[in-house]
Length: 337
Ligand SMILES: Nc1ncnc2c1ncn2[C@@H]1O[C@H](COP(=O)(O)OP(=O)(O)O)[C@@H](O)[C@H]1O
Ligand SMILES: [Mg+2]
Image (cartoon, rainbow, N blue to C red; front, side, top):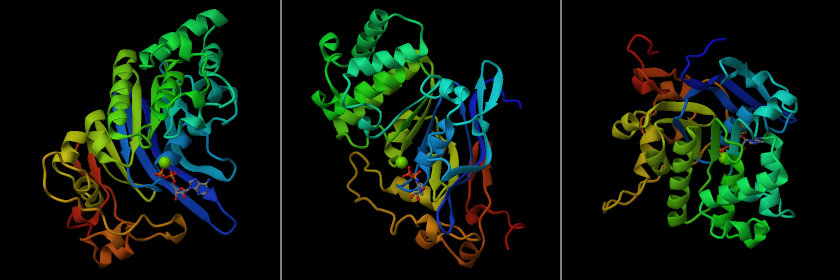
């Protein structure tokens, strides 16, 4: 396996499924995208589109064996060696040395990574000592430094406090401190600011970007809000019902969105100084149970849908070198049915 030098992660044709009593749910369906060294890729889509399952597939924290990576590859370039993360044992030593060390994840709800019964300091120190050969005292100093870096005031006092003594925004900062204390190559941020108010959200996003530049790490920023992507990412992957419906450079997609779903997401971002009221996309994301093959899953909500969309799955069409869209509107005349 070979990857171009500048590619850190290459997800190819990923299929992640859940086995239920009577069916197989395709939560992530033939998803492909790559992350270059030092860049930020945004993954956007409404709730239930498969964003978190994609992230959890990468670090293998899905509820196995109910969940299964049924196909595809997750290629990770480590010191000039390419590893397929999809083939690693989720509990094996190789995956454990990558997860939370080389690839770190932060979540919407900090209490999923913070343990309420230990002090913030104890938890960060433990993370540091798991990955570096340092004394307890050195790790404590690093933890305080990290808390200071993420903007927590009086860090040498705060380090001995428990998560419940922190406000929501502070807990989010503490979780970021913990995720970054191992200096990962890739940070996956899964809706890290969704639960926060707009001012704190802007502060946290700026903080993440500053630390990213300082550490030179790559990032996957997951959000349901295209507005967040604009300020943060170089490229964007738009997901709908487990599919990548559009992906490409952020500038290009914001200037000329192609997929009707991307257009709908863009139309629902508030524009500063604009009187125009927001236009939400009508309808909701279908449940996985309701999906059978052979149609465009967005068709029921799409203003352009016709018979073809209701009866045949669209291919992904190339708009420019890095820009693709999975929609019949862009099919070549020859491939039209
Ligand atoms: N453990 C699970 N068992 C069955 N279905 C699941 C499980 N986890 C997630 N799903 C389904 O997978 C789909 C994608 O979920 P998710 O990736 O969490 O969406 P989001 O884009 O909001 O992050 C959803 O339809 C969800 O119901
Ligand atoms: Mg999610």
